[in-house]
Image 1 (tube, rainbow, N blue to C red):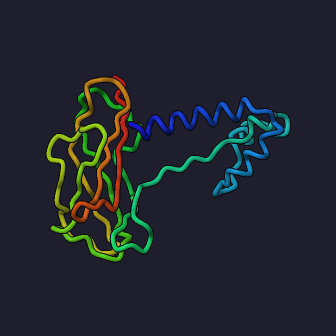
Image 2: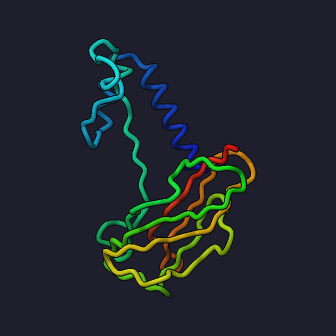
Image 3: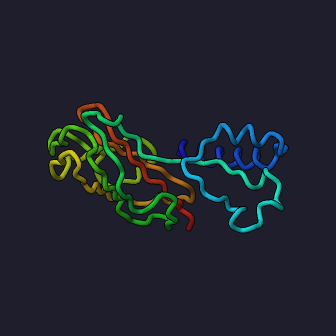
Length: 183
């Protein structure tokens, strides 16, 4: 929930700053944000950009990723896929499976009995246990699909649940699901 609010506030603030600041300040702000790819802005695609003020053309770049241990670590992961996707709209009390496929990008194998998948924080949408053993051993470079039975809350709103892979009490890979209950 905090991440959701943070992203919404960040988007609102960046939109306000982009539209409210004079065009003379825009180049200073643009230098602070390094875009990973040189893609045309929405204004460039939809309009002839030389007719628009600079404040409409520039836009911030926001990246969201899975939290994992540093590259080269004994235990680390990369998110390969997630179902349902974040921000999926659902009815109240809808039963669904949260499914994450993660790749072991660490040096060590994830043992079936040595690594656990646990609920960490957020809305408790899961319908069974807070922790599970892995269904199989996962070697370096291999993937595993993690499935949690869930039910959407009965009130409208945005809900997030955070889960993670643990060795003992130490988390090395966190994944999350955010849904929009709107009916």
